[in-house]
Length: 303
Image (cartoon, rainbow, N blue to C red):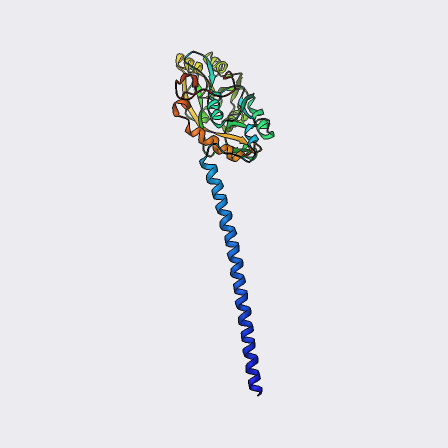
């Protein structure tokens, strides 16, 4: 009799633990399945959002009014690139391309001309929210940058007649060098302002003044960007001035992070920029290119 009761009790215990284990495993699988479904639907929704944003250059945002916020395009007041069209009229490369870029993006914009050093602070505080600039740690704190560089410039050395040919940066030691006011020139600027290198610096207000100083024999070398003005090109050819590349500089599109939908807008601007035909990028005086794209925008192209 006792053995029978023990056997029944053992059987009851086995059934209880088996049922409890089965119930626990069932609930565990239900919980894991629910978590998996949440993860899958969340990932699919995010992917759908990204795909729509990446393939459609004319995105419809939740707040359509946000698209009307004006982009304030910061440019250096001492232009690096000023050229002449076939009618002899001066135009700035950045302004001409901006007319196409913002026009096709359907975004209002206006230029603001600032000293180089002030451009940084205006981009940081949001008074200006767009520019083409060198990518740096400081600029990435306040601005989104394009994935790839959109422009390239050369920083080079123009040699006065009779000066030794320039081959390396140390050739500037114990020499007289002309620089453009407000341009910092990065690491090259640090070298020529280092007292240990004994470089005598002369400042010029603009590119043409600097070249005139070089031609007049005021210095041995002129430090300037290759993309300057067509007028300077003519003077360089006229006086047979030697030129050597010092370094190549990559310029990126910058957009302040506080601009509405900044990441999406930057991607859209990048797509539009890379769709612009090379003939416009290489010769961006839109009025000189018949029948390619209409000149759009609401800004004067005078510096």
